[in-house]
Amino acid sequence: MTTIVTENCLNCRFTDCVVPCPVDCFHYDDVMLYIDPEVCIDCSACIPECPVEAIFEDPISEEHEKWIAINAERAPQLPVCNEKWDPLPGAEERKKKLGF
Ligand code: SF4
Ligand code: SF4
Image 1 (cartoon, rainbow, N blue to C red):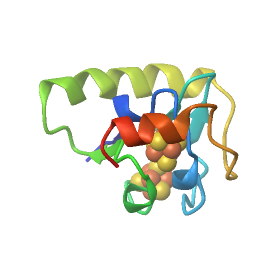
Image 2 (spheres, rainbow, N blue to C red):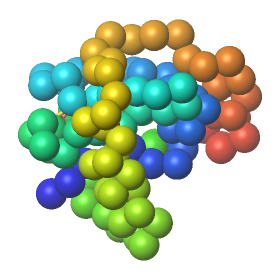
Image 3 (tube, rainbow, N blue to C red):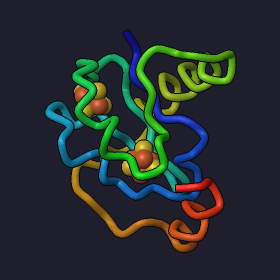
Image 4 (tube, rainbow, N blue to C red):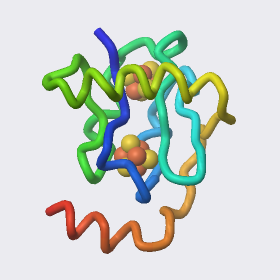
């Protein structure tokens, strides 16, 4: 099993997801979060916390295959996010646009 952050997190970064993570495997850049697959224990605790359904376990589409590679490549290069922050500017509008 692999747990990944996908497209809907872009420009949102609500960070609700990091709160229940027992192993601090979320990393961040200016636009979104990524999960380090080497550290994640696939406990699924983060999945229901994301208000825009950006987190998936096991790829369900070709699009998700792409995000497995992106999470694995980006996460180890970036700092850890393990506390809840204010979302990025415009995140609420983006959430509405995404239909949540
Ligand atoms: S809660 Fe969802 S949108 Fe927010 S940072 Fe986590 S994965 Fe991204
Ligand atoms: S599945 Fe569990 S270990 Fe992996 S990122 Fe989510 S909360 Fe953290």
